[in-house]
Image (cartoon, rainbow, N blue to C red; front, side, top):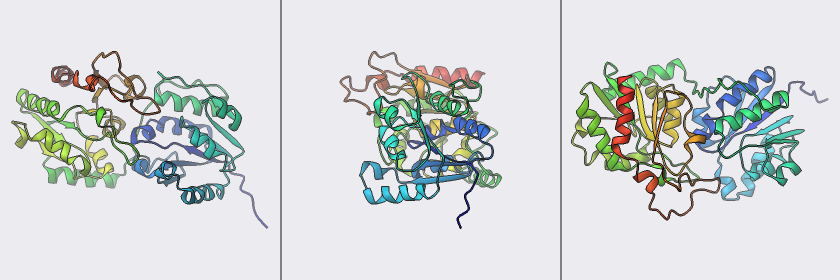
Length: 361
């Protein structure tokens, strides 16, 4: 005799890059407030799992290799579908603007499927869909869908937009030990810089990065201006060539702390939480720093700051007003006919001006 669980089972699908997943955290919180007794599961890519681990609003995190969709790995797709079908979900919420995940949701076996309105495919395959607009912030799109699941409307508390990475006390203690080993002195004004990033297993976006030479000139200028500031260069092992390009022409390279390549993602989160400021471009480190409550200055060019930059008055965007920017869409970045002018036109002086404003405040 099979016993049927009366507990509602909900699957949230949110894949993509680190920032995509972090911008869904407020929506996950809203789902939990609506379904306090439900079993809430999240389907997420392996690449971004580290930023969502430990989230108390989730009962289960199911991670997988997202490239199985790109490579059309039918065997692995069937394995994933079987794993999800065995969980017997009642509802599936698709926080992803992709028709492939709408089609994929059809095989999971849930009674109700809700996602974004992508046209006829949404109306044909989903139980309900909600409209989203190009200039809406990604966080708002996720919150709208969560609100719809609650009331059938799309209104929500606009104040609840805190991204968050949930770290344990043990992780913070370990990060403090690492900071000591790296000689990060929190008696100084500590500013982090991430010149790399903008890369994941599916896509590589070098055109989102501000130039290594600009980062080097900026770092020298900050150090020259205030000897009470300590700069910490952050990044993954994959970023080391980029960072060497930054430090290679610096006059003050001996005065920076090299944390790049020395931390896991969660160790980086624990370190950046204690920084007074973080400078980067549209990338995973930008979202991680913002999620840890650190003020962020971010350089934007081909991507849309209105929909992707960290919200909040303490975070600042620096960009050039170039007619063709932003050009990024769900299909990627088109071939640039202007030699990536949107990033090259962002001067060191314009970023340094914002740094000085943040420093003085």
